Structures are given as structure tokens and as C-alpha cells.
Length: 307
Image (cartoon, rainbow, N blue to C red; front, top):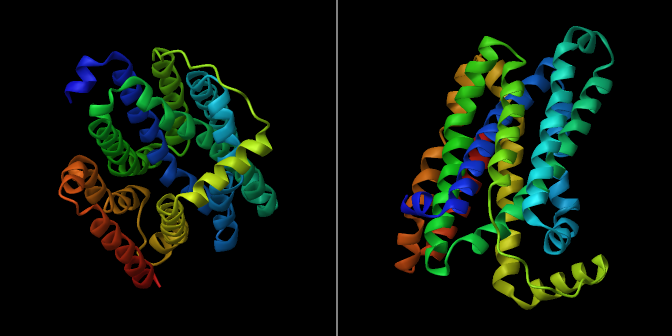
């Protein structure tokens, strides 16, 4: 963790990633749990998750172009503040929950899905900008180690600490996890504000359509990148199906409380943390490809077992 101590900007980026992903981990449990209180229809609950992930399909390319053209630090701050405001909208739904239950469930879920889409859109902006910031504040020789540390803290906070914390907060009070989530976004914006980035070299700004076309052509010219993108898309598709409806399975079949469900969600985090810490060791020994194949096969097995 010497980089966290010696590199001021990396320390603030690391802290922002930790606190932001803690909030993401809390909302990963709290959002479907709230949806399950508004409706028991698996399709409608899935619609909320779909709305949250849809921006990654629709906005990734244009947001990537915007990230290239504008101040990445300000984009991250704006995205976190937007997520804070949208989370306050979720709190409003909770405060009117009795009325929401009595009203048309399509209306309540539709509004929740709209907020989820906004949160997902802000997440795309922030994550795209954050991924391009790291190489600007870390020396090339430290980049792989820094990337592993960032991945580990994201897994620890988002998958290992966040879900059980969300369960405990829900057990205390339903609004508590969303209020906590809003605070984490505010803190993340505060940390990012203190990051110092080197000035960007002047570049020619192409029209967005042309920039997207060039990016697509470049991707097709690099088969490894294209295959990696397709593989990651497939893995995310499989895992999203599994996780989205797991809340109903946990409630109806296992009769789990929110706290117990939070513990259940941490199971996959152990391997993720170990992978982030020791991944660079495997890569140096030329077994990275083997690890990707193993992970892909395990994803298919998880889907089979869930079925």
C-alpha cells in the first residue's frame, strides 16, 4: 500500500473508489429489496435491474467520447453529485411507501426504474472517467499494482462489506441504506475534488459520431480487445440474470432476512479480492489466459446451478 501513502492524488482516488463502491455495495442489496416490497412480480423487479444496467449498453460509447473531451475530474464530481440527488429521490419513494403499495405497482416500479436508469447513467460517466484517470496519476511501472489495488478495494467494499452492511441498515430502518448511500456519493465527490491531474495535451475534437465510428473501427482491428469485450459482456449478462431474481428466491424459498441475504451476497467476493491482490503474480507467470477460461466456465456452472 506504499502508493496510497506516497502518492497524494492516488490516495484520494483510492479513497473515492473505496467509499463510492461501498455505497454501490449497499445499493446492490437495498435496491432489489425495496423493489420486492413494492411488487412480487419477477418481471417488474427485473425491470428495475434492467433500467440500471441499460445505460452501459446505450451510453458507454458517447460517454467515452465525452470523457476524452472534457475534464475527467469534474465529470466524476458531477456524476457523484447527480447520484446523491437521485438517491434522495429513492428516499422519497420510501417515505411514501404505504401510498406506493396502495397505488398501481407499475407506477411505483416505473418511477423506481427511472431513478435506477439515472443512477446507472451517472455510474457510466463516473466509471469511464475514473478508468482514464489512473494512468494519469500513477507511473507506468506502478500501473499494474495500482490497478490491482483499486480492483481489490472495489471488491472488498462493494461485494464484501457493502451487502452485509446494507442488510444491517435495512434491519434498523428501510431508509437507512439509501441515506448512507447518499452520504457516500457526497464523500466520493469530496475526495475526487482533491485529485490533481496533469493538464491534457491539446487535441482535435472530432464530431461524436465520427469519434464513435473510429473507436469501433479500432476495436475491430484489435481482435483481442473485441473478444475480451464480448466475453465480459457475456459474463455480465449471465451474472445479472442470476443476481436480479435472487432476492425473491432468498425471500420466498429460504425465508432470509435482509441481514442474512447480505451475508449471502458476500460469498463471491472472497475470490474477487484474492484475484485483485494476486492477479499480477499470475499474469507474470503467463497464466492470465488460463484464469480467464476458468472464470468463464465457472460462470456457466453458476447459471446451470441457479437453474
